[in-house]
Length: 313
Image 1 (spheres, rainbow, N blue to C red):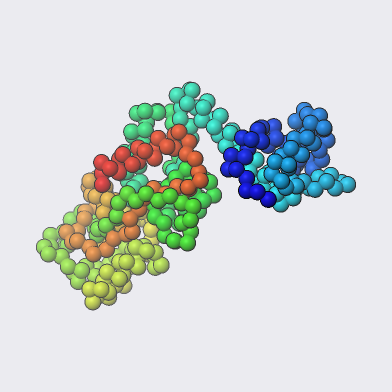
Image 2 (image 1 turned 120 degrees about the vertical axis):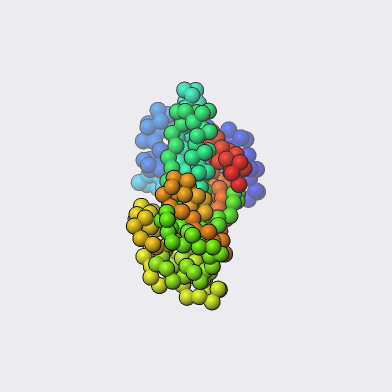
């Protein structure tokens, strides 16, 4: 069989009605009922399917005594017909939204650090241009966000690609690296110390991410490379409210992304210890699916994030 021209559907004059007919046949498994559902005559419906089969040079349906069953080629066309009609429906929603001054619904996933300053700055810009835009924000770990992105629940995410084998079909645009800082309660005894070293903080009580997390591993390795044992007097948690409360009530220490630490320090909630840590997280960036066409609203938000990142980083 000759290779089809990528734009074969133009030559075939593929119509929305043919897509609807494919779906109706999949649901009804009967040409008469499918034609009736679409207010067509049976001969007209049969001809449209026959024309499509001839153009593709494959059989889309097996004609059986009890009705019609899609072949593997038919199942493929039906799946893509559903996707095409869904996309057309979304396009209509976008047009209606744009006409009414609304740029639709945008779903974005984000890890904690850029959620503290980057995304709020981008959203503030967007709200000046499109005050009625509906923005859904999901703050999670990168692995959770990646699963949501690949299941079509997010327009794009801001995070990390942690597993190389799962990065096919994705577009990644790096924004910045993520250094880490040690934080403690305001007035902590170590705040007055000069020339703080790792050996000065290794024996203190710590609140750390659980064993197995990337940041915990890098924190432990930081101490080991300095010839020190990692902290043993620890509370393991990622619950930010609990961490903040424990830090304010004890002399415990905690390691967190520097951008987040600066945010808490600016609110006079916590203080950053005067020590440069040889520890940082992997860079984070914007991640989206290569074959996912962004809506106007999602495209606006993505560009606002890039503009904010350029100002900040």
